[in-house]
Length: 280
Image (cartoon, rainbow, N blue to C red):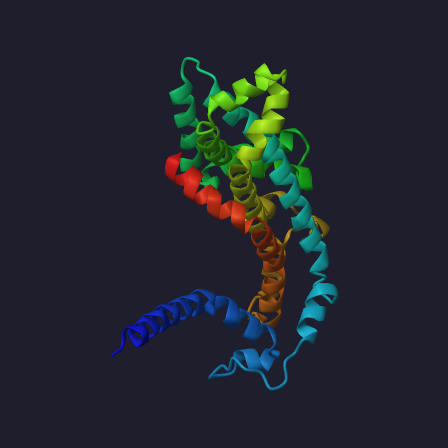
């Protein structure tokens, strides 16, 4: 066997393995998309078929603007996710910067306590959070959900950002001070651009948390017009019947914002994972 032929065979085997691995990862999405194009009877039939002779694209229209009116929960989740990301970054970044750049008594313990808050399940904390939200009359509001989400997203975001910020050489900031920049200007012009991968990671984490969380909206929200997608997806399960074709159509719609976000910040996410997670 010639060297060139052996090289092509090895390359083909690697590509075949990668394609197989990709299809295994995408199998749930492929099955969900195929089911979303079925009729109710077709979704319950056996054996299932991935290729549809008569795809029911109308399922998406029915879910979006029909009796389920999924557009309302979709935009509620967009508001909750965007607000959670903005509030998390605005609060976590200064905290991470202070821990990473200033020396004070108890800094190590403070980081440990911040991390320790992540060891508690939301189920354990939800009763106390509910009482606080009720005391401030924020039940049945999107604001109450956003504030509670931040209680869970800020601690880990502080850790993620702390790992990035402590690896930024202080000489760069000192050079900015010499050029006449204040600390705030130095942070804006030097620190924030260099820590963009870490900010992107914290933003993705916060957005996915707020988008997927079911427990908090389930307990806080009783007004159907304020439900996010995680709660609205339960509408497709009746007492004795689950409308799989419509639930899968809604699930595909719900994954679109996450997929778009990953497409835009994928580069920063990879940089953040390799730099922040390993070095931090």
